[in-house]
Image 1 (cartoon, one colour):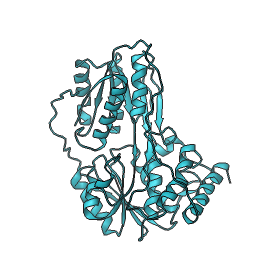
Image 2 (cartoon, one colour; image 1 turned 135 degrees about the horizontal axis):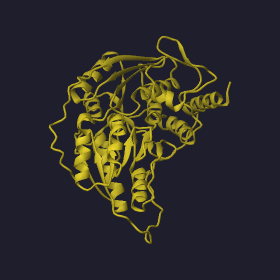
Image 3 (cartoon, rainbow, N blue to C red; image 1 turned 45 degrees about the vertical axis):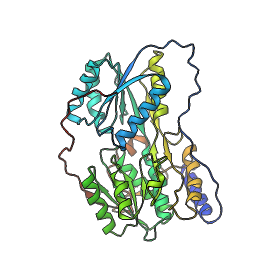
Image 4 (cartoon, rainbow, N blue to C red; image 1 turned 60 degrees about the vertical axis):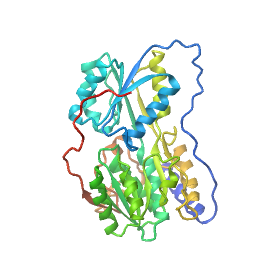
Length: 387
């Protein structure tokens, strides 16, 4: 066996011992830190515009990314603005509106814009872009992506530990980053606890679709639901149905509003935005590639919440440090698909490109299909630039 496979085996053994024997207590801190002293630095005026696919006034994916924008802007005195509820087809119109408003730098706030921005960037060579979800690098574009499946891996383990039926549900929005790898990672995390457990997955985006997907998962006998949606409605609906669930947004300070949430995992990008803003202001910004992960505190997992079973925190504390240090390899060793065919040999592990392009599910996943209605529910956009 390779050293990578041995490391994964060691993680599983350590987890099993921790569940049964002992654990430690650690608390997540704020991921943002700013130790730079810019008191004598020459700051060059910039204005950064954000383009959001969803509604920035709702506490969902777009809303939380906008709050991270504001937090970074306040700490750097960067001027920012945004346009929300932008469809993919209207992305260029939003770019034009932000340029007209004086933006020198533009951030795409959703992975659905990735390909559109890569194709558009050459038309605006005087504008610097940050392309969320991209891994390619046009001359004036920085690529930013996140290993969201790391949080899903922990979520799968916690869901299985708290499941009596050994049937876990996963409702995922395909418009989010790495949805298929996140489903697979949740299944592999689940299998750390129960090797024969089943993960049922369904795709949904809008609130009505999310309700249909969750109902279908509950009909399959799932007693814990993992949410991975841009809308906060998935967590709200699980709460109202009285089912245990795991959220995928930042619920700091709101835990008491979600009494049957076991934990949550999310991405906190304000430290990344802050670093980018300072480079812009100092005129040192250059296109690069950045990956948010548990190692740099962008991908985060919460502590176990009050409704979680005793011992849940011990399982989190056993696995989390391995992911932070890079000692836990999620997609390595022998991996089979749902038909039982070997996709990854025991002596191998998946590359980043292979993970990003996953279009198959690991053994133990039953996908119920998509509940999405492809008609857009975005309101007519006037491309109002908001501060």
